[in-house]
Structure formats: C-alpha cells, structure tokens
Image (cartoon, one colour):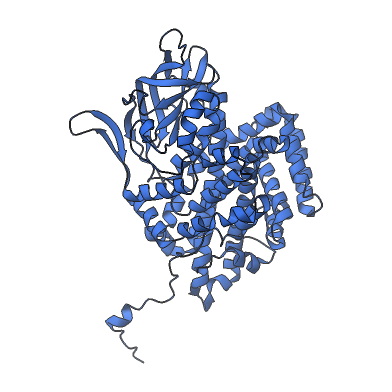
Length: 560
C-alpha cells in the first residue's frame, strides 16, 4: 500500500509540542514557596508578592532575560577623546530587569523596612528574590551585593547613614555620577586576588593612609582585584593590607568632590555562564578608599556582607531548581510518547517527583534561613543562621548542577537548544557553589562554627529536634549524625578530611526535619526514604516508594 505524500501545508502543522511556559504566576503557582511565606510570614506578605510573581512569569520578562544574555556587556575603557572612563555598557533588557528588581524592593530596602518595624521584611525579600530569579539570574548579582552591603556598612555610623538610604531606594538610577545627584545606588565588593582566591588574608593590595596615619580614615589603595562583578556599581567594599593587617574600605566610583575615583577596569571575564553580568578585573593605583571599621579587622567587618550574599546564593540556586523543574514538569505534561502522556509514564513520574522533592527541600531551608534574618535578637535564630547558612550554601548549591542537568534531559533534544532556556540554566547552575566561598570553604566554615561556637550545635539539635517522632527514618538520621559529629570532633586528624560528608549529612537532616514538620506527607515520605533512609543511588529518578503522582501534580505550573 502506497502512503500519501504530505503536502506543504501538512508539513507545517506542528503537533505534540509543549507550549511556552509563559503567563503563569511564579509565586502563586509554587505551592512550597506559598506555604513557606504563610508559615514564616503572613497573608499580607504573600499578597505583596503576587504582582511580582505575575511579571516574573510573563512572556515579556522571559524575552528580556534572553536578550540580556544574548547581548553581553561591553567594556569602554576610554571615551572618544581619550579620557579614561572605565564604563560598561549593557543591553536595554539588562536595565529593564534591573529597574524592576530594584522597584520590587529586592535590593537593600528590607534593612530600612525592618528598622521601621516591618516584621517580615527579609522573608518577603527572599521570596521575591527567588521568584524574580525565574526571569534571568545574572542581574541578581548587583542586586544581591547591594542588599548585602548594608550590614557591613553599619561598622561606621557616618558611612552607613550616607549610603544606606540610596542603597535601600526602590528607584534604579544607573550611571557614574556623584551620589548627591542620584536617587538610588548599587554596591559591589572586591575581595579576591589572583594569588589567593578565597584566602583573602594573602591579599597584597596595599592601603596607604593619607595624612597623619589616616586620621580621618582616608587611604589610597594600590593593587589588583581578580574578580569584581558589576563594576558600574556606585560603591564597593574592598579588602586591602593596612599596617595592622587586612582592612575593609569603602571605595566610591565618584569622590565627594565630584571627580571620578581612579578605578581601572582591566578586562571583563569570559565566563561559563552569568553572561549578562559584567565580572571584571580591577587595578587600583592611588584609588581613594575610606576605612570601614578598625585596621586589621577587615575580614570581620566584611563577613556580614559575605553572609548575606551566601544566603542569596542559596536563594538563587533554589530559583534555578524551581525554574528547571517547572520547565520539565510543564513539558512532560504536554508531551506524548509511546502511547500516552509522558507525565503518566511511571519512570518519568519518578524523575519529576524526585526533582521536585529536591526543590521543595531547598525552598524550605532557604525560607527558614530568611526568617532567621528577621529575628536578629533571638539567640536561637542567630545561632541557627550561623550554622545553617554554610550548610545550606554547601548542600543546596552543590545539588543544583546535577538537578538542572536532569531537568534538561526531561525535555530531550528540545532542552539542549538555546531557545528552550535550559542551557542558560545549566551554565548558571555551578555558579553559586563557587561564589562567596567554594564547597570546601563552606564545609570548613561548618567545622569552624562547631569548634568555636558551641551554641550553634545546640541550635541545630533544637531545630531538628522539633520534628522528633514525626518519622522514624529522620529520628535515626539525627542520632546517626550526632554520633558522626561526636566521633569526628574526637578525631581531629579525620575531621577536615570528612568535612563534606558531615556538612552533607547535617544539611539533609535539617531539610528533612523541615519537610516532616511542614510539607505534605507524600513529599516528606519521599525525601526521608531517598535522602535519609537507604543510600541514595546518586541519580534522580531512582525512588522506590511514595505517592509520586501527587508530588508531580504539586510541582506542575498552571497558567491563567
């Protein structure tokens, strides 16, 4: 029997393709995020995020995210007349994204809102930062650093009063101009150098006091910074060696007299991902900096900024996970193969359910940490944040690359092409595990906290203990982890070698305790069985029990 030859019109008929995932609200369609906001905050907080969620899920936002990554930032070291300007030009889509993220209060606004009595300012901002991360991850870097700068600036009241109102502004005002002419400002940081990386005490940039021993806190800086993102920001917190040791300095792009500070942008980094964001090498030779805190106390001064940016690394990785699993679940819900919808196939259900459980566990932990920031005077919250932040930074950011890779595979070849958006997520996935301390740095920070601050272990025990009796597998995991801690603390020769193993276990148990307390039973059951019970096989989609269909239904977005 001879088959008919299809006509041209038939060839152009497209069937069995998932529609683009646009027109959904990334806040209200994320059950885990909604429940976390209501759990730690209020209905009022959730209501304040609805417009942000709708805009983040719009076709317009998705298009701007694509364009900001297709058109990379360009360095302009000199103007047409030969004057050194060291400016970076961005595509209009970058500015569109920045204007809205600042306008939604995702930069430093929570610090002033908290000071004015808002009880959940940081929780709201964390949920918004996570949701807005669905649009495009690169522009989150200057937003994050601006948010994180404020607690470090508080080391000097005068400097804090000068900069905080501008950093907390909800008005995006780009361009290199005196701050007296601006309605909003952005902050950055310059810590790492080529010879030391994470070992900032090995920095060689020198700080020379101006006048008598820098009596008014003014110095000139001389050296090189290896990785400074967003060089168009208005002010930077920079580490340099003063006479008493590593010291923190506030370095503005424009000096109080209106002249440009000498801050030479040597080149922009050609990075794996995060391409919309300009990451640069800087040279300083006579660059003016104003001391922030005491000489020799630079690491302690800037550590609050590092802590806040580490939280954003967790939030950003969680956003990548959520965007990836949303795309995966959306695709398999609308795609058919082998006689039925992919989402109804048992093995695909297994994969998507496993991906969702990973995402929900990350969401629960990230939002728990954000709630702790809203309680700066509660000893338990402070101690929990101290230990849980490096745990979450290590574990959530480390899980993201393989999770995103598995979500991409759910789309098959469609997920491997740029138009799907999945390659962008895949390139971005390793970033947050490198930024603000690699996996090893954070695992070692866990050991440092356990060794120096006994209250942090008490806080971890108290927090996971609140789920005691909720699941036998979790109870056994808690006991086993405590035994591991006791054994390793008694064996200093093995302690550092096993730091990753310990951090992984403590983080997973903490996630499990939150899910047992707050998540639907089917989610907590799958997590405890696969992450705490039997040894996880190391791949997603190897679950051997649980109501997987219910988990998949929970993660699939819906559009208006």
